[in-house]
Length: 326
Image (cartoon, rainbow, N blue to C red; front, side):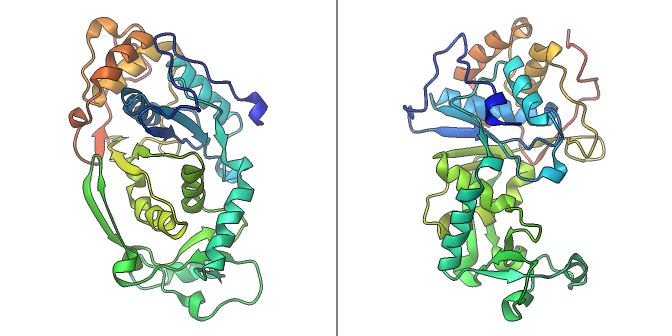
């Protein structure tokens, strides 16, 4: 898929939203799916919440396609996700950013970290990593015994003590604090197969797009400390972060392609949107559930983070999500 195949920005019929030349009240949010499958109920929940949060603040809502891992991607999924957003009238600002077209920017960030003396090569195998004692943190083996020839990954050093302590107030999950040297240790920013790691790419892209607010699923909460650390090392102020509870199935698993989450049926877009708003605790009027534009017009000024269910997860409804609610 090329950028030429992506749909242009289409403004909502009910609002004349800001273009990229006007940051409104300074709010720039984003929705950043990975094209590993079609849009499902869990990803729609995040899209709706991030959209409403941005629009209520008269800010921008950008879409970024995190197509950085070709082995995991599904052909046509990126285009399908965008078509589904349009069907639910979740219109974005500007052009869709494709991570696959951003490799030069990631390389520049990698070189900046290398120049600061923060990186080193690592050829540890999965077998060796699995054989480590029961601790989540990398033991720094290749920092002490650097490999002399590729293939190898590139890790970024994480300091002990206060310099490696990342903390922030999460918009949904409250105060968060992580000692990176204990939780993950030195972490990979360039994989052994030559692909840039998610942690580096997402930070570089958030900086490039001027993202001020990140609203995403709680399954990404454990990435926040590493990303805050990279923002700091790259000399940038991180966005405000808010991690929404994710929808889980009866086994407590997040809805995803791996857990066989059913794709959304865009023929029932108003019902899908109505259910998402209910799950977010926003309680839209039943008489509006037949029209996406009316639902969004009602929801934008009434969006209330405090009504979102507390915790890390929302249980999936027992009813078939592909059937109309009426």
